[in-house]
Image (cartoon, rainbow, N blue to C red; front, top):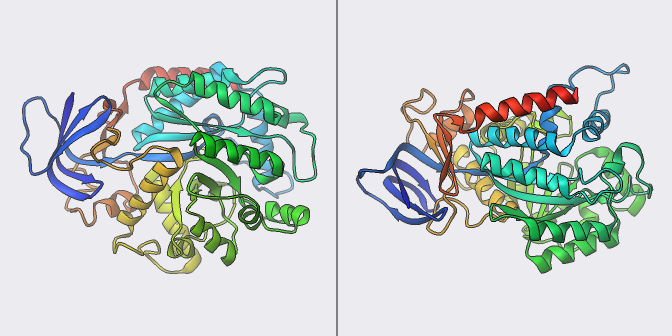
Amino acid sequence: MSTVFARKALLAKGWAENVRLVVGSGCVDRIESDATPAPGDDRADIVIPGLCNAHSHAFQRALAGRTEDRSADGKDNFWNWRVRMYELANRISAKQLTAVAAQTYSEMLECGYTSVAEFHYLHCNPGSNGDSMFDALQEAGSISGIRLTYIPVLYERAGFDQKDVKGHQQRFAMELDAFLQHFSRCREKATDRTTIGIGAHSLRAVTEESLRAIAAVARESGVPLHLHIAEQQAEIEQCLSATGKRPIEWLLENVKVDEGWCLVHATHMNETEILGLAKSNAVVCICPSTEANLGDGIFPLQTFLASGGRIAIGSDSQVSINPFEELRWLEYGQRLALRSRNIASLDDAHVGQELFNRVLAGGAQAGLQVPAGIAVGAGADFVTLNADDPMLVGHDERTLLDALIFSGYRLPIERVMVRGVWQVIDGRHIEQQQSRANYAAAVEALQ
């Protein structure tokens, strides 16, 4: 049993003053409002709930900053970036993945993510069962202390009209039966710190029959199902050519999509798709820094939210590992496209508070980490902030999250707790030194 006393805390029901959070067995046992500090309390100025990073490819942290050189023909886009990503994917070992992922997860914690959904397709070298890569990620989760949702992803074909997986993609490839066996083994091997989900890479990478099979397993097992969709215009064109339908249009017409689904990106939708996806209650994970880095496009946020859509955020390719920067650029992209301001403030006058609340709920849905926020029975996943930091000084509960998202410099995070354990103290992860050394050795070997 431990206690945290906060002068101000953002609870599931809203902001409260002088709050004591009583923690036991990794969960919030009791919340005392209008309390006074007691001996033994861990004291904090401001406490907010940690956020879920709902879409991560941890291994790509080793690629960040290494693809910003202009190609010979000057036609730089997602598809030639993917070639560079494939090269890294085919070099990284399980041991190196542990080091890279542990550093990545530690950085997430230092910036206020307390859970992560790892969308994983580096299953194997040909002939192996792929469990060693799951073991590597689970070990990285244990080292960092982050709350991990492992999403094994089926990748069985190279494209809508390409049945064979060749070259760099062979490390991703699994047949459906082998993939489902991997999913079952991971559920058996998972520790109490790891949640297992399931996924398909994209419509182009799986058959309709396999997608239906995965959806059935997700429903029967009660696990979230994640899927890349409608990220690139070329994907829209390929899907139209193969099926006569746009990706989200085809998905909504052919598979039952509901609150158990997390659709990643969904950047390119028409109005019918926006309304249909919003009505499905699926959550869309938007990854603004990666989508900007790859030149993907801008998600239709205002229309989707106005239609009742649910959203989460993710760091995806790890070009930025900062949830508040993701939220800032999610809003800024809309402002640039619409030439207006405060686009996401539909339910709350303050756009920072609304964005935070929406992705807190959406991330919990995507990662199966419920209930969301600081409430009795919820996980003790807290972020403490320094009220005297220039970013926050002079702000109250109306504008604190506006300042945190839109001030745009070093975060005033002091401590981060996950499952009742402080993993970040004085702004640094408790395993920072060792994680950095292991990461450096892994990255140098991969060059």
